[in-house]
Image 1 (tube, protein in one colour):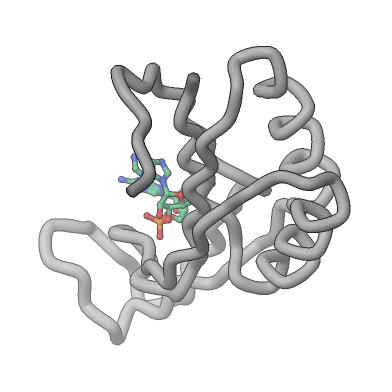
Image 2: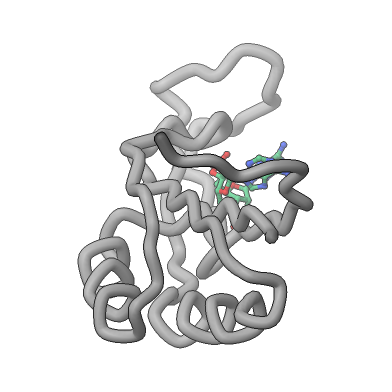
Length: 107
Ligand code: 2BA
């Protein structure tokens, strides 16, 4: 078994959740925020048989879109050298981690 951790933009989360349901993929949805932009995003935890990992990654790829966001310097992130103009940041469609699962139990 594998655990897929998928971080997606919140605008795509509802559609992705629907696609998971349609394909019978069980997932847990968490409200999260990015460490860099501090914008809300969504993290899905998906426990899945190894043979279905590519199917899940395909669904995530199909439903996640890259977007341009603007980082407002007035937010003042410590440690970053920001000009006075908003900084354009490309936020990817999805950031995915695929981890081995040592054990899976449900009681
Ligand atoms: P954020 O941390 O808010 O990052 C949003 C976008 O800002 C990133 O998009 C990237 O384009 C840019 N960015 C992040 N850190 C940066 C830095 N130190 N310098 C310059 N630009 C930076 P993505 O790479 O598509 O990431 C989207 C979201 O996925 C991230 O939101 C974060 O929540 C998560 N993420 C990305 N990589 C991760 C990682 N290695 N570990 C954990 N979470 C990650």
